[in-house]
Image (cartoon, rainbow, N blue to C red; front, side, top):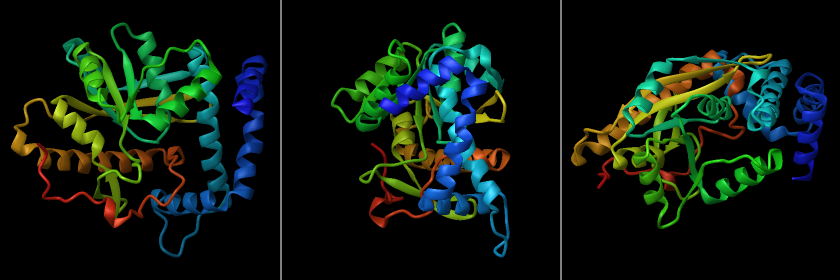
Length: 300
């Protein structure tokens, strides 16, 4: 927290342009001294850049990957402090989110550790009627709240901690108020149910929980990603993912499976479009068999 507060203070005092110089050193440090992250970056980029089996990822691509990650984290300082004028944020398929807000019934956004989710919150703060809350596990919620408080103590963040008895009631109440509830669908905890999906031509395990929650709440779901394009530009993309509002109980499992398959396809599409925005620095294609959800398990 000390270093985060110090970096925040320096960033706000020096300005975005001057403080970004530090990011060059941060990216170089991880390139030199983070062998596990370097190996995982290489494995991912080989898939995303569509290199053949004999091709290798040049060190400059690894450096660019780390630098993109550092840049997005750094920009969070300004976005959380409402310095939106520093950025060129372009929204694609905005009509999708506008229609959901106009309907007033609430909806789910399922994103990934791809680009920045904070740029969506920036758009939400500028657009009347759009309130965005994030649902995540309690430990993650505690960490993100601590980090955001260090960046801006007065920042009011809507973070729903899952895992409590009343968590689902809280989510339901927010949806009833027309809130858009965001979740990340590409990481799971050790005890989560997961399901294998095809991702870059190989099986990868995705958590079932976010899709199952949307199905149980009978709400429409959009895919969302905020891609960093270099400089000060971000492109926010919305895509239709699923609509569980009219799904009969006995059809939920198949609907969840279809939504997860489409999610993986959209994730792959945007990874290819902006390959250096992928921030899962671990072996994404390895999953313990104990985590796999039974394909025959029917949702209640």
